[in-house]
Length: 122
Image 1 (tube, rainbow, N blue to C red):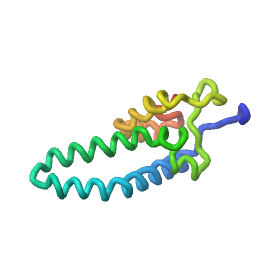
Image 2 (cartoon, one colour):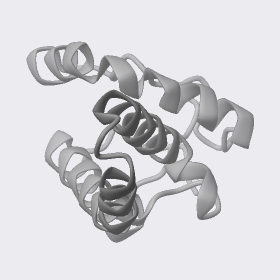
Image 3 (cartoon, rainbow, N blue to C red):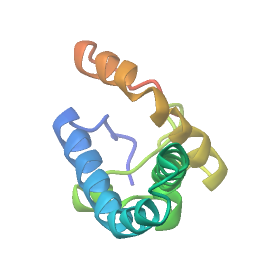
Image 4 (tube, one colour):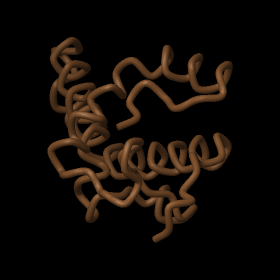
């Protein structure tokens, strides 16, 4: 891998994100629908559990498959440190990076209106 790594095209990153979102949603849909049926009289609990599971799975999506997600693999994207593109971040750093998923609306604004790295860039 050479020194000429560049930031990925925003359309590729967005499409990879949407692919990951779709895959995770399709995997979790049967589980969540089953829990909602069981906890129908406790709507708040079912919604809280569903939200927690989705956020947790989405946070560890890059860690589960060797440091990259399915969407990133399709588009040949990788996560690297901005200060040294030859280094791959540790699984711990990937986890910390993905925690910023919770503020994705702000990240989307920064990402699309400024031509720079997103807030969760390493």
